[in-house]
Length: 467
Image (cartoon, rainbow, N blue to C red; front, side, top):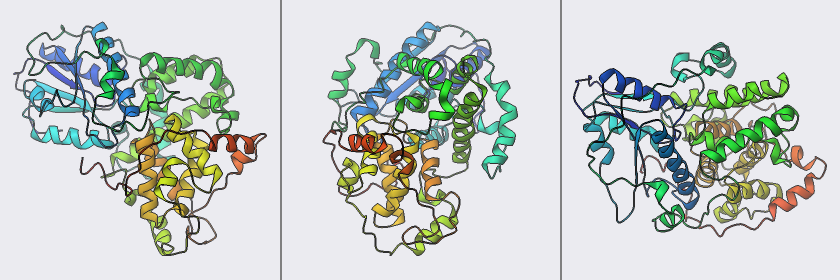
């Protein structure tokens, strides 16, 4: 990521993690170990959490810190030193990554195209005085190996599918030279010895958004979801995945994949070994690899994957033509955020986000389409969808969730022009309401009690450029 050469100095190879929060089957850690071994140096794994990242909340902090706690435990089991820092009033550490990096022989970090991870990595690479290497840990097939210029999903699949088998096979885990035990420029936190609830309660973050009652933090919870997928979900996956009234038909892995608590290789190995039919395994692979990794590939070529200008040009043009159309379904930001609009089905969708920190994929499509009509103009619709996704969801701020929203704002043009949407297709709630018990499920989901979350004066726009 920069022009510096390996000069032979430094006391360790720094492995700086932002989202790939797992100790095993982590290509970033494995690459750092290989480089450290080649240089005869130990590896120092570092993970830090700031108070001021966009939308920092009890929900996100609990999930991140629980994952970080298990990351450190897992690293020590591998013979690696792992140090952590939780930014707070009594423990500020200005420029800590730069200080750790400049004491290293090299830095290995994540190739992560969204959220603050991208610009933080680019900033460190530009300012630090040692070589910086980026390694992808989010995808089964690293996007860089596919080459540039793939313009559509079918072309992507033609390159991606032949690569999968090779990248699914695990290599032998490489042992590090020795744990780093030298001096550090700060006093690390040891999360496994701390009360995380008390720690989070004392931070200057959004305390109105509580931790998810369904998605527990940490490695054990991720493995439990994986076991549920292979035993209970996968045998009927192709038939049940679109039924939002049965959340047990979804894998529930997206929060753990987003924060790297589990990786796609481990998931696909478990899927391959599961007692399920070929059709169901193929459909799951299409969702995890054919769609998720396509969105990751797209994000690499976008200056800001969360910006409205990534929506297809034809869709932005037709929406702009209809930007001044009357919008009788328009709602306030408070009603949208709290799931208190006049649209019961939309409220059911939104209350999954607000209450659980996750939304069933079939609901996400209706939710995103309807926001176009429920906000004053297309740009506000996009900003609102990204804001709700990023603040509330444990898998927000992700190439896949931005890609899904962009697909709902674009996709295949409709043959019919209509008000507000132009040639962007609309979507009804029939795929949920039309199921047996669907109407009752929507009514119940739309009336779930919700936390009294705070509402900003305006929809935040471009929060990551000013973070």
